[in-house]
Image (cartoon, rainbow, N blue to C red):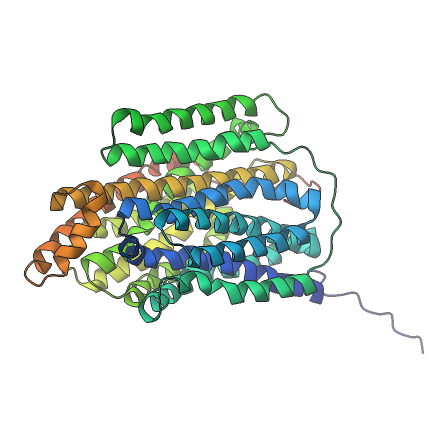
Length: 502
């Protein structure tokens, strides 16, 4: 009787213990960063009152964080090669924890914004470094399954963040929205130290530090200038930062055409589909993500809900996105991204239009339903736009394209947050006849008195309706690039060696 030959592994794509351990660590780190982004959104009105500042100013707590994320993303790929992905991941966790501790001790709105920048730098490195670790551990045959694991924090973070943030603001103190990160960071650091596979540093091409120093401050100065001009600052003081910022961005663009390793590879934009997708994503993030920061503020200021209740009212949107995201990538592959993106916008635009009609007494059921449908539309718009950008690129170009799209998304989100908060602050100031920086404070004071509460709530709700209308107009502009996207499935790819994106 001959001895049976061992059967080959029937599931060669199965994730082994090493990959699962790395996945656990990376999911914790990614969840921590995404949770912090959504936790703060619910606390913005409380922070405005705590620091006696305007709605436009307090939004720099979000905008500064997002710009720091933008700055950190391109550095991460180079640093993973230069120092090793595991070492960089540990540094990112430590930096995020330091920023959380400092933010919890903030004594002014300026110090809070500065400490949020520190947090954003750490959070910006966590995602790309974690992806690099997992893809290297899994290998090219299991990349799809690994990407599915990385989707978990992206789905759970937006659901749990508003609830946790609302509960902490109501039950404890605003400082706890940052202190809660400390135990999570400690656990993530210990697990990363013990469980992540060690990797050796590799040779890395020179990093475009000058390009980063031109682009990131340039974007920040342009946004800051817009806020100053809208708040009524003198022409010289308002326009000067914007002019300097535009010059910085222009200098970056000129430099990017003359060096071999630019921060953003402008050669990618020679591909028509990539360019259309990048434009669509940028417009979408300005309008949709910027508008997303208004929902908790509406429930808190115009409706008088608690922070926890406001957080719970945001959950339907995240549930809708959680349902749509896993399906829409497959639908884009099958029917073409153009069809799916147009379907997503058809869901988003009427839902967002519901919020342009809000009053201080609008029933909650149409708002909750609109939030859910909007979440479905977000999944059907954002994911196919990102996949469309990669349709015609080689594997070597995909890594740079991913970095470029991440930079554009974060920068666009920061622009949207600043512009729409500025519009809201200006509208509130006009309604209550006060300077821009006093708009929200005047509204809050009027609603604190029984004799003026109903009238004040109506004025506040009208300001939100106006700002939502601006967000609707921005999102509607996405229809133009959506009509230009491919409406057929992508052709079968030519076999190429898969490179690990850094």
